[in-house]
Length: 240
Image (cartoon, rainbow, N blue to C red; front, side, top):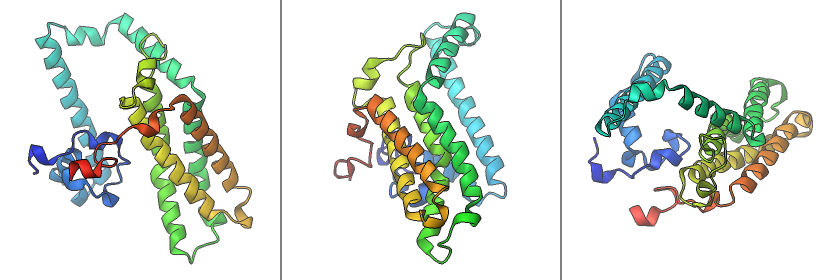
């Protein structure tokens, strides 16, 4: 287990979770915790991963409850308060109404079908780079939708209104989340483009066009996202 000083604070919040390709695993608290739980050597990695997530949520809830109790707040009552439930529903509806959020989900669904049928349109079977591109597309397929949703959720308050402060703050969580979403979108566009050929000209271009439109919408809504400095990744000289 690394010492506290070794870890880069919050680096795991703005990465693509592709630990096998990350140079900062020895300085990531989440990776260290997951390694201690032995998920890599598990006979049931999916089941263990689900149980680990459930345990993490339970631990987070317990911490929130303890903190609320220290502040004199009844956490359980707050969670079941009808007014709070209504506020959360307003927030959810507002987030879902963003075109970018809908497009990101559309890409996940359509892209999945296209990739599942890659044996019918992939004509570079003897090209190792083609396998690499497919792997990239599969890795980021649902990641894009998850990060776009989280980013937009970060700029909507409980009244369903946009929080302009979050948009303007270069180092806000929303901007950081959208930055990694944009990186994933761009890598996916490059991967689809590499695989493009005359034989699959009716399959791949719609995916590229969808991602390009999504990218434009996200960049327009989050003009400061690319300026976000991701801990570790964007400040290597500072943390070495």
